Image 1 (tube, helix red, strand yellow):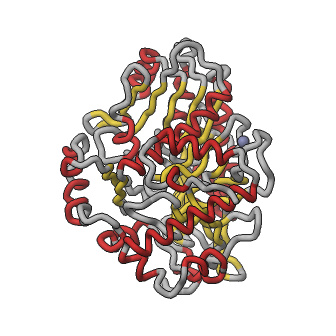
Image 2 (image 1 turned 120 degrees about the horizontal axis):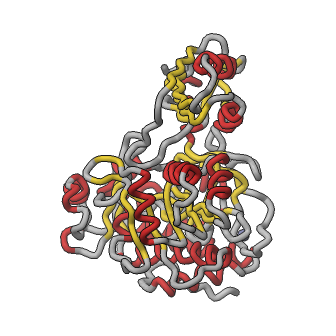
Length: 474
Ligand SMILES: [Zn+2]
């Protein structure tokens, strides 16, 4: 019987304690790791039922053992998401001092972003709400230690893949002065080792020249940023070969990195390695690339389900919607939490030897999966179709495709300088057949694509609910 150090995973206030636990898990045999996960899940379910009125109600017809042993019973538990959590905030929470009105009041006042929540040591943050709605999240000291330990696990993999000379400096390009987790978790790190570079200054977007000047000045070996920022810096380096900054590792967050950005960044910044860090304010870190280039999943922090369009477990290796149950969120427990991203999990193990499973494909937001009318109703069109298509349309520098309804698509294209005329027509000719003759495709040729404040500019995005189309509710 494995001696399970559950105190090491929840209720542990030491970052090192959690880190050691996570590191140990990476080398456990599969059976032993599964036993630990199961034990942590048992603890978490018992805690949620005891301390959270919301989960006391949700779990009332089940025993914890039934849920652990019966996939059918487990699948009966309702899914939740960011808006369910927000609507039920006051019954999900397990503490009395974080009532919805207090949290809402604090998060609505941006001038309080540098102030603790009512003098407490709680981390109270919101999400930007790229999909329209923001979410509220609270982490106590122990949970913050957990998030940091997850980050150090990733850092260990990075350090196994690069050879830094001299003291290690890292930087992150993020939205600052806001109630966002990236800013609040990093604002007190030692300035000689870490610098936060804002994407906005006094409400206006920071220029690439300003960002490049900061990078050349601080010279971080490791930089964390969104893919859209990485694209901007890569273009800057291509145009300015004497830009002196020499990164060793680039960490992409927020969205899947477009293939052409990856290729060009590797070429522009000689010797650099690119890593992905996949996480959310809602759930902590979910996945991270190791030194072998595979994205591992933190299955010792989260129970990860991949569900198909009907809410059933997707076949092994198939892609579906990610649903997460946290093994360490105690302040605001989350059980069967639908993140809104699509993923498939590989059946193969990584050559690095870590026991944690590996992502086969991270397809990003569910709203990057588009739909077309078909004989059977509606059929999905993955974003990869457009990524490949636009690589073969000459004269396109960048594009963004938004599907507003089944029959209405808008495309914005930034042309390459000196390109041939008739770009809009050529794009329309290629895109229209994908959606069928009945669809209207509007193409606009623009000077630039402007990212939102969050920095997450999706190249492909859907704005309607396909389920409503399928059942004919709309
Ligand atoms: Zn690996």
